[in-house]
Length: 557
Image (cartoon, rainbow, N blue to C red):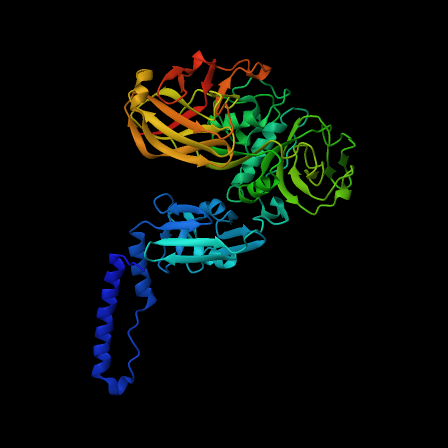
């Protein structure tokens, strides 16, 4: 094994201590007896090792995923435990990881649990305002191997339970205090906004328990809709991605027929994942890791008082098997693979159901919750989960021209293309990130910045600032490798190269689809360009009257 210079230095120090102790023992061997070797108290040695390790890059290899201390704040504590942010555990370990009452960590993987109280000696600590957990201690409780290579500063973790599902056969967010307040939409067509806000609230729980305004989402968006018209999940995504909300329910309460346009978002939603239709394993993992998943049903029920042959009131169970398209949004908050098929009013092939939160008040179902069979035609077809909800001061500025978000797609009849939006810096700023949509799974991307943009010939001066790949469709915010400084009044371009396997139209666009709710869309607020090959660019309006869904985020300097 090859050792670094720092470990050779430590060995030299040990040798000196060894010789020194040997000399002392030798001088008075008649009193001390046989020589037993030199020892260093771990309270002295371990902090020295930790300080040295923390002075270099720590690498993590966890189930085919790689991280470094340069990307995440990973460190070695004075007991030589590798500590990682709790927020990192969900994706790194493919687990559920949440802090309760600011002093207890619950991590779940498979059917195993790891429960820690906040204390320095048990692997769960608070450091600089953030919570951290020991990977070594977690591995012992979650049936994972864990080893640390001192030569490369690399920790490796693997799951011993190969082939075992990440999630248990039954799971209910109600039992984890991760379900928001049951509310009633009344006679309005606002189920989509209730489902969106409820899923958003669930994603923040149990660490934060907030109540967001349905009125604001359904009335203060950029679509031409009223509360009776209904809506869909993409409207909620657009509203959140544009930082139009969310706002607190207390500031814009439901049902009074008015909204406030002067309210600023109290959270910034920077990532929303779309789970493939009927990917039940993906839905379960999303509920397990992140919280409630917004989905759609076809319902012949209009309220808790309506009767339908598809709903069994005695068992609170629903299943529709037909050709009608979804018309009602709910939130998946759990599942039971063994839920009896006999509980439904229709004959089914097998057991199993999702546990869903409705917006018809607590008098419906089991205090507002009901079961939807896995065999329902529509459940799990359209699915959204909110995975990155940040404080409202994460960036100072947002630049955008797609307030209605992803309405359609465009492309060159191939799976890749370039798109660019042009913005003007409002002040001296540091450009830090870009937001965009992946229109299907397994999308790869490259982001570039062009400073001092003048015309389409300026694109030859683009500089690569980030690249990567995305597992799910959805909305993403990608931080740049390094910030790009801008001067006040400087025009700049965010260039997105996107590659979506199997797609012919990979770029998300905002356009007038002809639907009534899109009749007021503003397509004159942006300047966009597209390119077949990244060499020759044309103004996007030469191909279609639309805006590209590419945003920019900056901080003031």
